[in-house]
Length: 171
Image 1 (tube, one colour):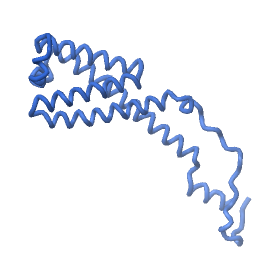
Image 2 (cartoon, rainbow, N blue to C red):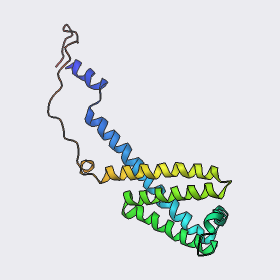
Image 3 (tube, rainbow, N blue to C red):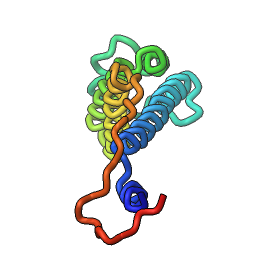
Image 4 (tube, one colour):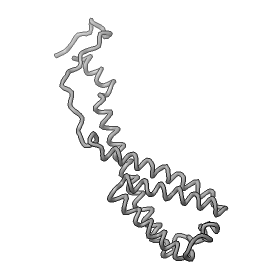
């Protein structure tokens, strides 16, 4: 009996490890989901206010030359899209995360073409990876396995054969 307690203290059960992992994955999913709702919505709304910065300076001239609207109206359209993308993450997290990842890829391309903003493009690459991670975690959250509780094991552990036989067992 005493040996059984020592063994169970040393090696956590697989079910316990799986629950800990599921809990950590769930918390990571919730944090990323919150981030990819709040950030696009706030950035989108700021396209109308410009209180965080002057967004028009980030537009690549080569892309502006192709735009049928002036830069201010383009920023308004971008702002509306970003707000929509943030709310899409609430409704359909996996799809919303993929939309945001695609959007961030386009933003990075724009920043590189604009010149002088490679540092911001690098930061957006980190956000891009976070959006892809959210998409994967959302897929895992939606899978039927994630809603099932792990089955309880009914078998009891027996002492290992390499323990000392002379060790007295207490009842």
